[in-house]
Figure 1 (tube, rainbow, N blue to C red):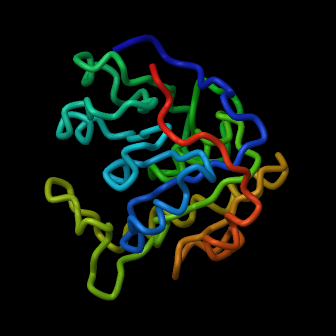
Figure 2 (cartoon, rainbow, N blue to C red):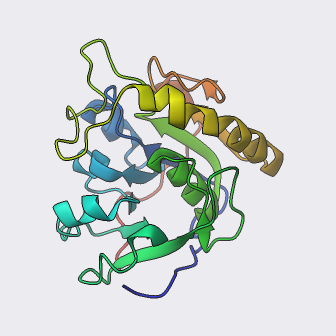
Length: 219
């Protein structure tokens, strides 16, 4: 595992979409982003957006299960909790875990919010986001009881109660700090339980996005 990484400010003033794993996430939604926003895929969301610029996953067990995701050509990023577990995958960049609450301003670290979707928002800020779009941030199970778009993690299933009891309470302070920093966050997730950010349909949120060449960052 390489030394801790400092996130480069690659896209100052950009729109960056963060793809969570919620049950509402679909390939149709993801395809609408291509060429219209930079994309951070969290965990298995890369399977719907293999062309994303960034793949983020904080759990070393996930990286091991997926063999380090060798086919992904963009940046791969994880949290320092993974250090020592992923030595076989030196292409995965490591940022420090600097605590749970709020927004980390130092590009060498992330606040965790106790969920990867939260961490992806902090990562987007480091990358230069002025506007962040959220998809797959349901923060609840759907009517069929699914907690993820692909069903659920078979090795470490997510209890639906984790969303309301653990994850959702973390976002209020983050929203306040993002607003103070001048970063706009738009929740484009249909039916999301996350209420601290403005909710806007995806097409409306994408209306003002500038076109840019799509495709992952080459290492």
